[in-house]
Length: 407
Image (cartoon, rainbow, N blue to C red; front, side):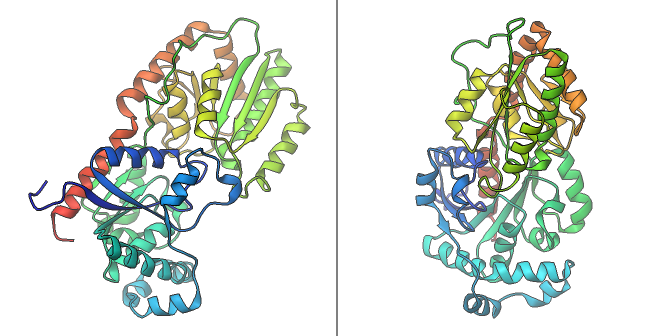
């Protein structure tokens, strides 16, 4: 670190709709950054819907977070005076990109004001959607330097990706697969400083106090799944697999933790109807949004963890289960195979295949030695490669480089 750089590094840390139901990773990373000597100021676009505020730390997080506010005509007009319209109009994306720009301009202006008031020279956006656009606009308007983390395919994060990435000081990308895809899309607009660094879990918090016990022969297999309620998470496929298992005479019990983006009034209702149509009322439950402590409690009580995503960039839920020594079944979709090696650290099945899912669950139900082996190997793999402090250390290294040179 240069001699004239402060020992406590200020950082703006921007997460959309913080703290949402899947944001425990960010809260862990913030704690680790503070331990490493970073002073993160939490920024967000807006609070999450009430039904998605589920963690015991949510209130404390919201009290620490500066929300950049909703767009309004007057604020947009003032911000528009300093917007880089030449570059904006040259950007691909058409009306959708222009609409996003208009929505984000007031937040970009608010970001600049907040950072100046707190002496923050750099902001990290944990999204490549509108949060990244806010940072990119703010930078063009005289605001702080910024960096990005890519958590999924660029196609999931809206138009204007070249504009968002062009002036980023550095970036982290959670899988090698996503890095290859981003390089193909961004070309010369990819920052020169890019690191592949998965998100991680607190392996001390997600740890067993007593040894994992393999499923008892003939006892109902206790399954646990955790993920937001959305069709792409494949919970409906898991429920269908449950029906197949019961019809084969394999006794199973399933709990699914997570909520839909509407706080329970959206896909939750459709999934509950599917559960009832399959006659699974006595075998499966939708728990809704639950705290991290509840997730851990369910993991420690489970025989097997299953998440049947159609597409999963990597999967913190898998990591948490593996850290708790729970044999884990995932889908060979997205970047999951960069976390799970089939037959070694977990089981992989094709996405959208209830039959293959049922076969994998049945295999674990019938093989205590396989369960014991995956239990130990999964924990060792996560402990070595997916600890939450690794992401914080990578972000700190990038921040030092960004603040050590010309902003």
